[in-house]
Image (cartoon, rainbow, N blue to C red; front, side, top):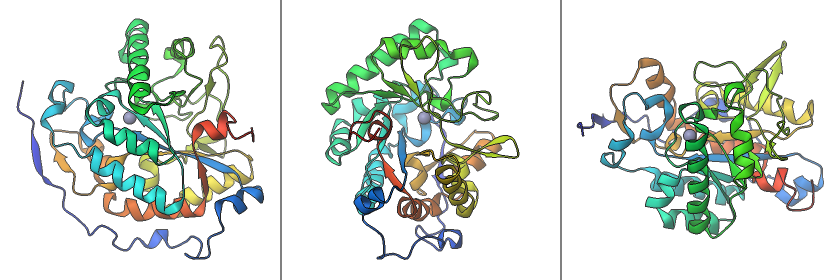
Length: 322
Ligand SMILES: [Zn+2]
């Protein structure tokens, strides 16, 4: 096993420091209660978290071997606790797409997520992209992950999100397997053109893929601009572009398309003190480390500016609204 190259901690630009682009929301203290916002017909959007640690992201896969994961100082527990605190402060319930690897090592963290009223869903065992697995390997992985998460959480796992949104035209066989293994929905498609992922020809909103036993695919949100799908469902775009863009785009989806937005982020994005992983390409490095210190404040703003709920409640109609 080779030695893991860990740099010094990231330079900090003061967590909670001023982020002028987030000073655009409602006045704090004048927020309308969630029930009243719902009653007024405001669309509930899906807040989702991909529970993985900073060294497990696909962009680092060339520099960080899975067999070396144990050597990295874990930050995911601390970071998910930060996220749970933010959700509690904002009275938001969310869906946590969780790696089996994380649940195995931090079972009490899974209990805390469930105790907060959130949904546990599957992000696979080891963050392997679908196109790097055979159908047989994929089936074994999603089956084992679902069972592990359900045993740990004490609740059914109904949803799945592929690592790096890696279901596209070539890996559409995955939908059928997910359904056969008891999943009711997937959120694994990003209908954009991107160097690492994307399926630009996919529908922008929830649909039932052919021959997938009624499984619902719920793509990450895009906004249609001049005939192109532009990402607006969180991820790096939310952190790297000014907040005003995300707010404009998500409002447009809620109002013009009358659709719920699917938003996602990672626990490591609220952690400017995470160890720096060396030997990664400059582009990935910039994407990963830019604006980490601004992220928590920005998330608190988006939690306040929009109405949020869990994927299962919005799309499987558990509260009788769908
Ligand atoms: Zn992931």
